[in-house]
Amino acid sequence: YFYAIYLKYGFNRKTLFHLTYFSLFIALVIILFTFIFEINLFGRFGSMFNESEASTINRISIIKDGLSLFVENPFFGKSIVTSVGGYPHNIIIEILMSMGLLGFTLFMILVIMTLKAIAFINRTKQEFILFGLLFMQYLFKFQVSGAFWDSASIFILMSVIFTIKNKYKAF
Image 1 (cartoon, rainbow, N blue to C red):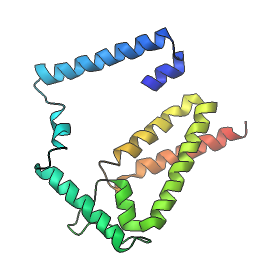
Image 2: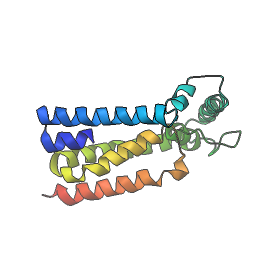
Image 3: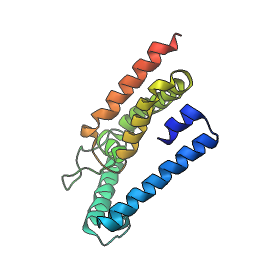
């Protein structure tokens, strides 16, 4: 939303008004959910830093296990699942443990190429920038949730972004 307002209006008083209005709206929604509906939106986030909670302990253990699998065979990876049968809920650690530095390097090359394509699209065809924003959202999402086998959305968005870039690069 913030980026769309910036693209439409630039940075001026109108932009500042829209951003302030939207921020107040979000604050009101949070207050409504927290107090009126008695839904604790911050409870789950706060529990992430509580090392005594079971899900936090399990996640830390799985991440450590994933990193140790990577260290056992750093070049090609060791396993697609951790020794307890799960996945680390972090696409980078999962790629490292299952495909090693080779897979990690290939994935990062794709990510960097995609980011460059997004920058090109942002400079030339801003009406398609939503695909770039979605890609960034999914990339961040897969740092804390999800698995590589479930990340088709990232690769579909990469394909769309590359297609848009290649279509308008000649012009």
